[in-house]
Length: 250
Image 1 (cartoon, rainbow, N blue to C red):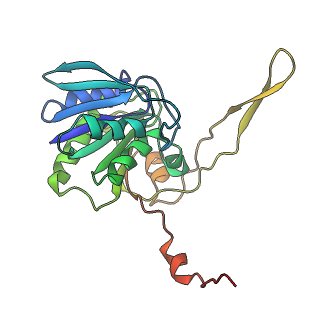
Image 2 (image 1 turned 120 degrees about the horizontal axis):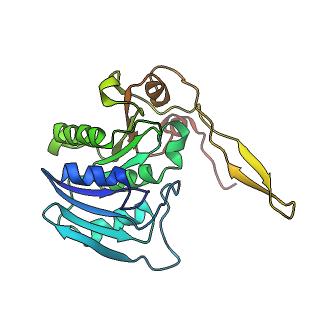
């Protein structure tokens, strides 16, 4: 298979390096990733200055490019410049830190996988909870088995998968759950500080999510399970669409 690999932490990050080394053993992998960290940029793209891409490496394992743009820029540019025919998968990660619940909306990792799905290519976002044990290589092997199992059948149009692993030894993971996105972890916290001139400034402060109901991604991670959430790009609320009254210009 042909795989476009990206992330939001930069091409040198350990998570993407694990995926590149393991996936390239059996598949053609092209890494097109930001040249530095671009976390929490969601699905943003660059409009007001040029986007530059430089080749870092090319060998038997594959090609690596660094882009001075967002994860979505990387996918767009990679599809336009690095493949004569579309790849079979767009894979983003492995992100150091869970992308679950409401945080999915802010994640550059998830934004990159969504960009693949918008282009008609199966997308996969992969993250691991920040903890003392983060087995990138084992998660990369799981991802390879997963995409090979799905294979050329792919995913429904406009759908991508959000994969999250707990930050524990892989041998201690309590199973794999197919989950829905939780909506229980919206954070309102800011840490207020003062500079030497007594002016206030703020650091965004994340809070530990509550476990939620058993069918959610947050609950799966809290129970030391690996979570796989199918996500669709179409944001239309079809129930409300069917119930909306008509309007006129009168």
